[in-house]
Image 1 (spheres, one colour):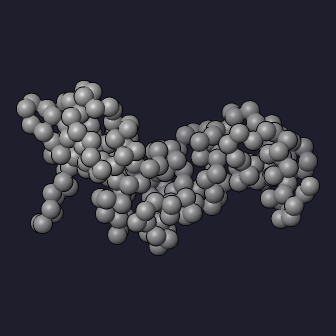
Image 2 (cartoon, helix red, strand yellow):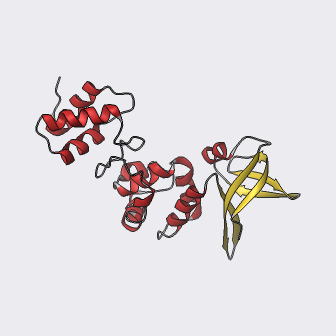
Image 3 (cartoon, helix red, strand yellow):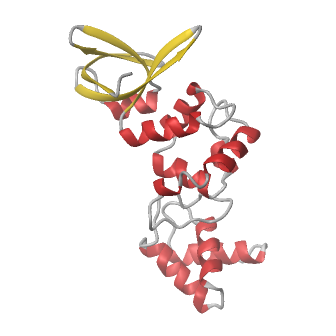
Length: 207
């Protein structure tokens, strides 16, 4: 079992990288987004690895950080989730985004991953929701069934101002957080976010 491999990144392929260490070239399964996080060609890198072995196959799966590997290993515990799907999830979704999508029950976000259907996403949520709470940023705003605010936290000025405004308008704090989180889009201003949250609340367009 290899905890990590430290060496020179000598090749990048479509789904693999090669890291040379101690005169040995290690072929490691690693998708493009993860490859970018690992490093550039000829860099000295550390790749955190999992050695997957079955009767008819053996492969190394690589990650740029221990946290990504930890999430990958948790995903492998879910029935029906194999190493390639788990690796794809860890590659295309950051640990905070992935964990918050699971904790918030955001099936839509999870099924954006190639090879993961609705039933698989539901199993992941059911089996890992509690286990992944520790990966969610402590100040993250979570809206049930939505991870639209995944990259943002409760100290974000625009979101805080919008939440405060919704509370002034008579919504409870939990309602305000839920509506603002569901309505948030990157780059939106406070006033536009409030209007969008009100539209979400009323279910109809407010001009």
